[in-house]
Image 1 (cartoon, rainbow, N blue to C red):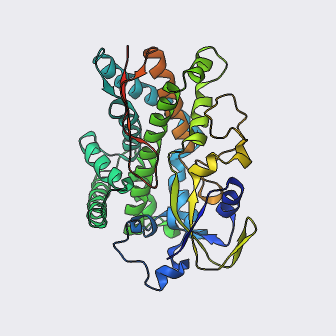
Image 2 (cartoon, one colour; image 1 turned 135 degrees about the vertical axis):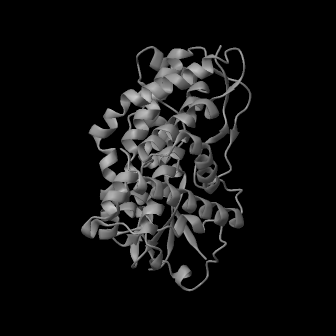
Length: 364
């Protein structure tokens, strides 16, 4: 099995929009030839039945069904609730003043998982279990056997959620998807419904969780950059965009496939090959971001990053992630201006994502 990693910004941009580079697994020759075992560690990233692995009309159909929740107007309407949740979480951190606090556990995780859970109608008592299952998928130390078991648990969990919403619909996106499922040519199969919930709920909090943690860590380890914001020479939005470029939540995303012979960056690739999308490396590509691309610099001229992908699969939740990220940073550093790291944080073991397993801080 050969997988080609695409890490150059220009080539990655080209690949993400190329009509000959597809998402559907049927285009991968090694898969069709039986070379990929079902216990392959990344099988759960290539085999789902949702819009992440769909192309063309099917992708547009699935995307249309969930895009209603992420329009700029709907996202902006969430701002008061995002601020309310953030304030509640910061009050909890303040109550532990004088002690070391894990900022991931107390803010970076609960903020986005609360927001996305409320959007999809996941009750508070089930959110811890949801995180356990979703997070296991991103963990590189997860064995194939564990991954298979977790995916079974997730499908059962979300099938139960859908059944509960079918019985008692609410003002949430799961209920809306169920309503759409019964509508003509837009209808969702049960498999599509469950996998769409896995994708949207998982992507809706895991990546934002890492964005918040990565941004806080970057600012605390670059006090000169934090000072720029406090002096009014940069903004919290600048911090979010630079973090997305410099330390993208998704580093590598498996996989895309050449449905025909394609030429990318001057290299001809035969049909049936697999491509690993290197969003993290592309964010530090000097060809796109300059000779100082390795530096965290809020004053740099942003030339366009790919942290939310590009083309037809551009992240639907980009606006919501930015809203949560800027809100969390602004309110955190306003509440705790003397925030510092407390010890050495630990990285998550993951090929796909970039984030911290713990982020210990002191508020004073």
